[in-house]
Image 1 (tube, one colour):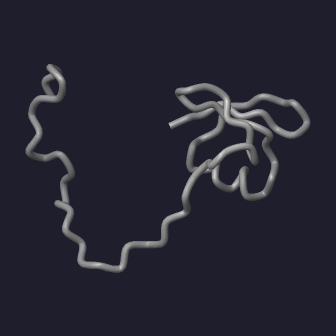
Image 2 (spheres, helix red, strand yellow):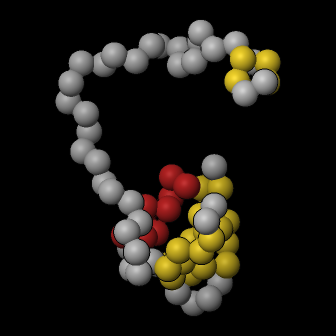
Length: 75
């Protein structure tokens, strides 16, 4: 998924969401775009870093393999 960001120098860009955490941690961006609007880095709670799950894997190998209908859309 892609997301809009504004770098410290004012340059706007679209980056992959996998890269967003790195940009925030390295303090390279001033803000990024969420569905609710622009988020100023440092002004609000951005993300909670979760530690890796250490329990037994219970998910199916094929996620959503039993889903045939999603909000009226045939899969």
